[in-house]
Image (cartoon, rainbow, N blue to C red):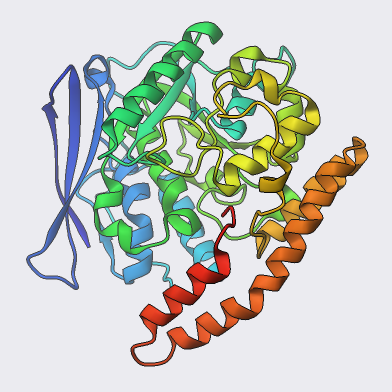
Length: 403
């Protein structure tokens, strides 16, 4: 695969677009356009190097097993790191490859207009993990890196077509930035509309998507913080991981994976001391939701913790300020959620919330009862023309669940 060209053009409403055209060896004549959009006042700071394109396209090259050819200079440390990154991916997913990277020889030069004091950025969704990283790093202690810029991405959690949802979310984050003394940088990207959609975003490439945005602004940033989504005891192959995020670093811009040493309830207990966080939390997994729907598993998982902490009444982004224990007893628990909810159960028990413990226990029991019908649905799916029946069985098995 090959990055054929990169162009920078003025967009609408005070925006500037950076677009790269990519061709694939296995699809002669077919191309994709990978597009990033930034505020126009950052146009002069956008990188001309191949660094952002290397990390952006590495997951696709590893999946296809095709050499990745770039016409732009790349930082040697990043080139070395990407080889290591692909080796880790291959150990996680044996069908992937350590693809060769072909780039011109030489070193990318910093832009003459680069800021004299390079900054610290944080990829900021307004969720528990990124709020924790933001506020914990403001603590005046050695090893903390106070954040200058909050990077909010349209086309990541919130899809590009959901413009009204992102605009509402952006206004909320603007207030957070104002209250915390930070600068908000709203960015758009179309990566979920490119061929990358064929790959697992969560399991493989979302860390690279973040890094490509950060490295397009590499002259602005000395370091970029990536908030951990999993704790060390629960680590599994994932697109943002404490082993892989640091490998997205160059010799001038480092990526730091932050917060994996803390449980979710510990993060929320810390955030309960900050009204700016409780007033603004957005954790919902439904990308079209302008706030927290209060009906999905992810919303309820966080509502359970806030309830046990006594902080749910101070969290107006959730539609209910008290916990519905009947809903809490209907969460569908499977796979990695089992570890998570056992931890929540232990946390609730330690705080004397036997009612919450009983609700979680009912969720475990109900989830086990549903498993035989789900197993039948999986077997039916393998039978010729069994897809419709399998989907019907799954709907019946999961009726009334929060998932």
